Image (cartoon, helix red, strand yellow):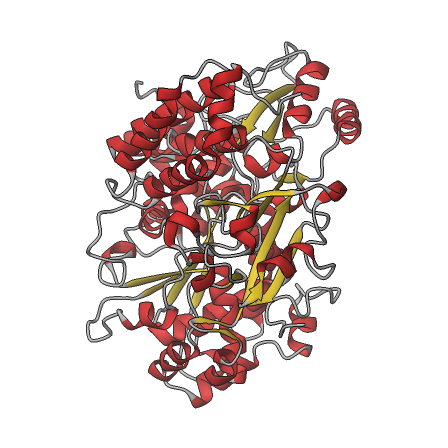
Length: 177
Length: 435
């Protein structure tokens, strides 16, 4: 990855939020703000972190770009490749599996005509599997952006899908707003 | 019904708001502690209560606080571990979502006891909507004088912030959490030094679980003796058990430690028995990391005594015939459940969540997943079963952090107690339970 000239810039409101978050950590420890800022950056960049965006985040925190890349590649919530407008994440760990998460995943695959890890051709939906979302008592569970949808059934999945299609659902919104 | 310390008022509408919480006696413990107790007296009270860490390890909370050296000028930090990610565990989300002020009240008490001037709540990134609820409650606590400069005129000042993770089970391990809070990859640190000596920003730090912290106001309000009077043996107080799987009433229950497991599973007050009237097959009693036990051993110990929901009773028989209370993530499986497939989902989890620092865990978790997939697909051999055990033994104890052990224990216990089912997969060349 090469440093490219930054053409990305947050608007004033977002920069203010970023600076407010940085002030939560001691002087000289501004790197602590990296995870919260990356969440914001990803939302501002259509749900994924381009190297250009990561370089911009590095400049905001006054750290090296490599420090951003190594962190962004560690955490599963950060996407390093483009994703669809609405990312559907299906939990597949033990308790969700015990309660039928495989049927839910298979249903989404069938309805969307894609396999897990793929994006629909129109760029509207990306389907992913994730590990335990810590909502095992209402399994199976899926996550879309900052929303949890619990006690999932095939019928519920149908209802959500038609609603999301209708409203052109976008799951990448600044989680702080 | 056991004393309800954590769930008592959760049904009250608007509890997440300051006014309702305050009306119900909220923040009284902060008033009491700042007025009547020195920080060391708060620590002494927590020590005396017998409270043990509710995140899974069960380490005595007061003792952990006692390791902090207060003689130096270094800033000290109190950090809440809200990275709840252990499969089967979903109790902390409940507290954060419905009763954030109780967590904040506990954070103030712990911070005061340790002399922390800045504290953080590290919450898993998936739970951003809970983070926002807590941030709103924190803002209310500030505007009502319970956070910020000179709290209640006591001279004690505290700033409290939420910090989101971004999808990494390993950040529930306290040194990985600290790394993550510093804006780094969640790689656990080699211990010693423990966080009490070298923690956040190389300063003395205590990391405690949400449930542990949320109990503190009750202990200060009612006294250590009242808390220690609840429970059994060295398992003092109440515990949140998050029950899931094949039971009629999945959910979060606050039990007095010492409750018989059989009553917990079958009584209407708790899990309400097994779904569809099915037979109980196995239970993972304390989150996916603890050894799985077959029905007979979870209900009764190998000695034939009733098994109780306590640290000691669940551990009775060690790992040969016992397990652990762990985080209280109680996963129940009925007779239709394939033990190989269940283990495979956990193996996939640990493989995905291994941070990759230590070879035994990084490589071993991948091999375990691969071999289990092979057996489940009907392509396994008898040798594969022993290979699984051998790999798990080579991970256990050979890694920097306990994730290696957590990945190994479920494998060793599943093969120990359900070997026949693994062999049936090999002999039939398919899963005997799949449709």
